[in-house]
Image 1 (tube, rainbow, N blue to C red):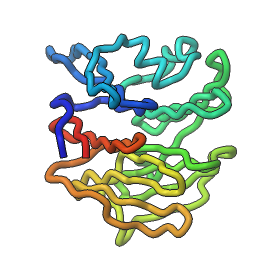
Image 2: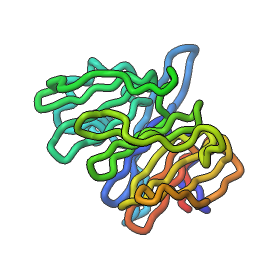
Image 3: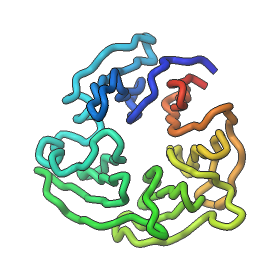
Amino acid sequence: MDRLTNHKALSLLALPDGIMYAYCIEQQEEQYKIGFKMISFDTGKISSVTKSIFMLTKFGADYKHFIGKIKNYLTCFSILMEDGQTFVVERDGSATLYGAGGTELWEGKMLYQNTAPGGIAVIGDTLWVSYPKCNVLIRYNLRTLREELRIGGTNSPFTEAEGLFPAGSKLFVCNTGSCSICKLDTSSYLTEPYFEFTEPVYDYKFINKYEIASLESGLYLL
């Protein structure tokens, strides 16, 4: 496991041939100075990018029409849909589906037992959401956003699950409570251990042959 950077990623995005992330440069009381970096797997180069490039990557081409409505653009979750829509889930569980021109197509709450999500991922026509305080993963119908399936709870295979990453029918789940990643087969609903760390893991990306984990101490190539 090789460390790519000692920056703790506030938001980690997958690119076709690399990653992009936001991090805190410095903090003075309640004021934060945020930087944005991109790592190319082809060249190994780490370069700075502008905030607008980061926003475009995270929220899509229409982000300027709705970014002012988002409570925290760094910590919220976003998924760019195939039809050009953008689905945004805030850390308090409020969720909005934006269409062309920033039109609000749907708005609601994605809470479970009054707790907020720790991560989201899309597989096919389903939305998977982790709820770390309840050790639960829930599958929603992506068209209706209604709950279809729940995994976990008592004797859960998940421990404070946060970041989710889809790969075909598999879902990689970052368990911050056990400092590990497990792999869920979304067809059979079976889980298996995948990778263990010595500190909490918050996010994971699998891009081509490269695997990236976001830990407290930085970003690592597995």
